Image (cartoon, rainbow, N blue to C red; front, side, top):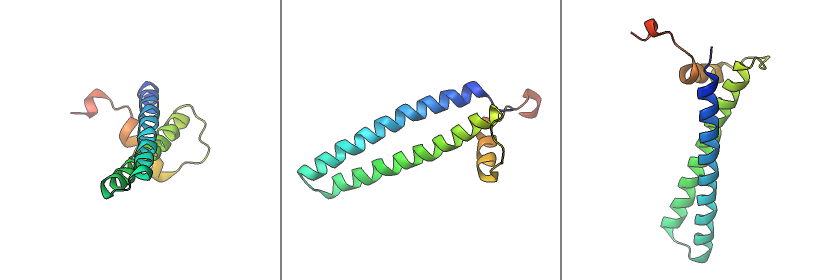
Length: 96
């Protein structure tokens, strides 16, 4: 069984971080348009890469949340494997 509290904490933290990274991307884009430079362009690519990684992780979090609530009708093996690794509750004697 998944830890719903941990899933929801990850979801909200990821959403706040995604908004911050997307805001930074727009800021970098405005700086690039004002004065194009390779460093600013690299900053845009880095921020966009971070944003895409956050969106991918949020997809796993939402999948785990829906699975924990019992709304998933067709399992997705890749998402199941990642969600199990991140959010599966383990008994204390199994962690030995």
